[in-house]
Length: 95
Image (tube, rainbow, N blue to C red; front, side):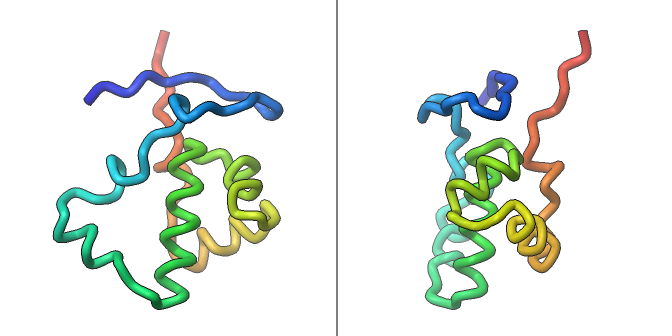
């Protein structure tokens, strides 16, 4: 699957087409997806933070808006759950 990289700026409106489906990035198989089905609050918070960061391509500002929390909280949760925000960001294409 080839992903087109689109630069986004603060204030840009995102459409559904701009978002990378969470499942395509984090669930390699249905077995793995079933393991994520839980009611453990910590696992749910971790999955929510990952999904928000993936959907916003690592933009903490947009992710915080999706989650309804502050940017500082996103950074803290990412640190607590050892989520590498840079991995969520698209690779820069050399010109």
